[in-house]
Length: 514
Ligand code: XMP
Image (cartoon, rainbow, N blue to C red; front, side):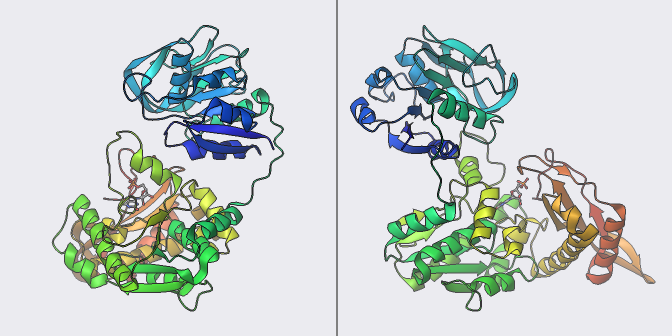
C-alpha cells in the first residue's frame, strides 16, 4: 500500500496533516521524529512530511533526529519548523525573524514550482512562527515570500526537497490543499487508490478498542458537538456510557425538554441519561453580577461543580468524553493570541472527577464534518443543524444582571424571532444566516400601550452572516419580517415595549452581546 510518513516534531496540526493527505486517497501515518532512517526505509514510504513544532533549530531545545533521512532518496516536504529543520540541516540560514508572523498572511509565489504551480500568484496562507529561513541552502530555489519572510517556500526539485514556512494543512491557508495534493500526487507519485473508512465506522471501531469494558462519562449540552460525540460513544459502547445534561436555567425556550426527549429513556439511543435541574443554583450565583467575564466564569465553574456532584454519584469512571472540535483546539491553544472571551466549554475540565483519560472523538473535525457525521449517525436534523449556542447560554444574551424574570423575557422574545425568521420565505432566508438570536438589553425606556405609559425593556435582535464566526456582518433582514417580529414581541412578551435591530459587524462588535 502506498503511504506517506508524517514525521512528528511536536506541532499542533500533525494529525491534521495526515488527514489532509488521506483526503487525497493516500494513506498517511504519524510517527515520532525519533524514527531512524533505517526504519523509515524498511517501511516503504513514498514520501515524508516534516511537521511544525514549538522548538527552535538552535540551542538546547533543538530536536535530535536522524539526518540520514535526507540520504534516503525520498521526497520530503518540510512545514514551518520542519521547513527550518530542512534549511538548517542542508546548509541554509535560520534566524529569529525581525517580527513574528502569526495568522493570516499574504504570500507571493515566485517563478516555477512543483508544489505551488496550481496556487494563485498572490495568495493567503496561515503562518505561526518566530524563527524564519533567512537564506535557502545551496541547490534550492526560493518559490514564495512574504513582506517579513524572504523564504516562505523553497524547493530543490532534483533532490526532491520541498518546504513551506506556512501551514498548507489548515483551512485558513486558502489553497493549502493544492500544495499537499501536488506533493503527494506529483512529487511522490502516489496514485491515490486507498479508500478512507467513513469517519463514523473508523471511530466506532477505534473507540471500542480504546474503551474495552470501561465506564464512560459525557457532559451533554444538547449542542451539535457534544450530541454527536455522545451518539458516537453510545454506538460504540452502549450502556457503558452515561450522559449528564445540566439545565442551568439559561437555555432557550423548551430546549431542556427537547434534549431530554432525544437522549432520555423515550429517545432512541442506547445510553444512560441524567438530567439535572440546576436552574436555581445558577440564578443564585449570578445574583447581582453584571460583568460579562465574571458571569462566564461563574456559569462555567458552577457547571463543573454540578457535573462533579453527578459524577461522584456514579463513582469512578474510566473515560471522560468531550465534544472538542478542531477550531476549539486552535482557538484555545495556538500562539499568544489574546483571550477576547473565555469560552468555558473548552479546556474547562472538572478537577475532582475520577477518570483515567479523556476521549475527544471530534478533535480533528470541522463543524461541517461534525454535522455530516451527525446525519450519518441518524441524529435528528433539527439538532444537527442547530444554531451555535454559547456554553453560558442566555447568561451572555442578557446584558447586565441575570434574573429568572429576564431569562423568561428573552426566552419568549427569542422563540418568536426564530419562529418568524425560520418560516420566512419558506425557510430560505434562515439558511443564508450564520447566527440569529434575541438578547435583552439593560435599557428601559418609556413607551405607551393602550392609554398607559410604560417603562419597560428593549429587546435587541441580532442576525449575522458569517462563515467562520471570527468575522461577521449584520444581515440585511427584510423590513416586513422585522416589523412582524417587533409587533409580536411587544404584544406577546410582558415587560418589553421596544425592539431594536443590531447593525454592527464583527469587528468592531462581537456576535454575542457580551
Ligand atoms: P463572539 O461573540 O465571540 O462569538 O463573536 C463567536 C461565536 O462564539 C460563540 N460564543 C461562545 N461560545 N462560550 C461558548 O461556548 C462562550 O462564552 C461564547 N461566547 C461566544 C458565539 O455564539 C458565536 O457563535
